[in-house]
Image 1 (tube, rainbow, N blue to C red):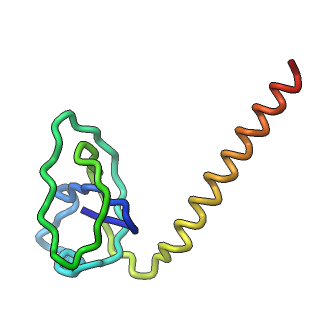
Image 2 (image 1 turned 60 degrees about the vertical axis):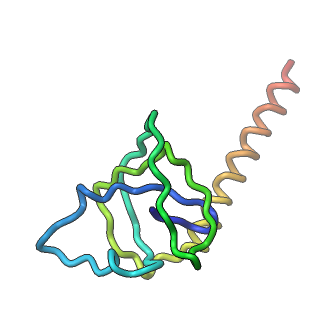
Length: 108
C-alpha cells in the first residue's frame, strides 16, 4: 500500500519483483517511490492490512488496486510540488468548465 497524506492505494508489485535486482525501498518504511501501472476495480474487496501503531490514518478504497508494471525509488520526487501541480491543473479545468457553461448560457 502506498499513501500520500490521507489518501492510500493498494499496489500489486508482483510484476516488478526481480530476484537479481535489489530493491532496498521494499524494506524501508516511508520510502518515496514512483509506481506506474493500470488501475483495476475489483468486485471483491481486498483485506485491509494491519498497520503499525504509529502509521498515519489513511483512507483506502479496498476495491481499487494499482497493478504496477514499474516501481522505482524516487527519493528526489518533491511530493508537495507534485500535489500543487495537480491542484493547479484541477482548478484550471474547473475554471475552463465554468467558462464554457457561462458561454453556453449566454448564447441561449
